[in-house]
Length: 479
Ligand code: TXE
Image 1 (cartoon, helix red, strand yellow):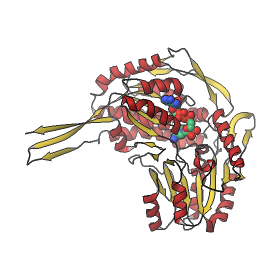
Image 2 (tube, protein in one colour):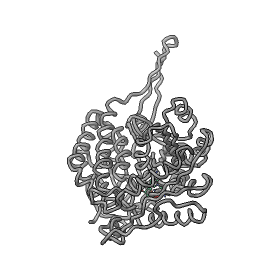
Image 3 (spheres, helix red, strand yellow):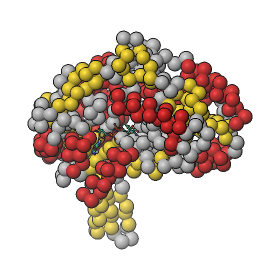
């Protein structure tokens, strides 16, 4: 499969003439090639976007909305094609792609298609001074959207939909590791009547294509989701250029379990929050803290439930765990097992690569539970981003809270308790952008999404995203 850039509504090979291999994680075989676009490709995408901005920014919100809703409908109509492509490209189980990734990509367009018709700005009147102030929210211009490989179309569209809904034109880059569904999206946009140049998709490495987007002098805002180190490097480049920045970065989220919780719901959800998408979700609860009185019971039950998960081909409907995304990522996960042993933790389950029959070169890894001897260790402090969780007991609320907060990240946190006072206390004091009480990954697209500390800057979702993708201008009239 040869992937091409999508510029001005057409599919074009890269001017760079450079290509990158695309691997199938389920068997390690190269099955396609994608452009490694250079500055000229990004410039072409920018020019198309800048030209389209002249009309798109003046198109009514109702008309923009209609096109976004149409894109949403078409993603739904072709959901099997998208789900199969996503599962093959990323290694995630087909059932997950069908039930989570692709429906959410369609929802992103539907949500922001509707939201833009309800978006508003402020006005302040001062009758005694005979002055009225009102605020315009104008589209920024050409914006850059850069997304990662873990939830490819889901996160790509989470940025693009609000950007174009708000009247911007976009130069977007999906992860070079998972380019296929973004490529398929171009065709859907054409069918939905999105004017050429409103969305431009350039493929390539972060260090070349991504960097060319970030350094482009006229791309005025960057919305990025990915690793914390990459986010820091983007900020370093973009800040002196005074670009607007939204950074959704890594997480090392605590999952705090009290003895007074609904045990069955907790344990079933904890299996998911630990290993969904092979643990490659920035919201996964990778540090599990359990109240000591139920620690041994939890340990036994959790191991039994995780043991029952089926690791297998992503295309097999019965697989719970597919392949991790790349060989590099598999090696990174394996390295953390070596670190866990060196730090003298106890590996309770897993820790090894899995050979799936006839697919021995695929990137499969056992769901792994590590009993750590402290929160102050690399296993608990660094983002592994794979099917690896740690567990450890705690005795008091204070101890659990301190350990939960004692990490550089602050994306999300989950607390399991039926004690209202305790849940309120933890909600107030946990250092994270998103707190789940007695649930995990329950999302309402109207809510602000994002993290604190090394998990990022800014919020996406709901009107927050539309605010990010618009520039405020205050007008003061004396009458
Ligand atoms: O992310 P990168 P990677 C974390 C996770 C993972 C690590 C690395 O810990 O192991 O990040 O993953 C583009 N200028 N998360 O390597 O490199 C890149 O091409 C501009 C957490 O995939 O951050 C891709 O499109 N762009 C995360 C995107 O940035 C650059 C999800 C993300 O790549 C660039 C994924 C540059 N200099 C990984 N360098 C989450 N929080 O959801 C790279 N890119």
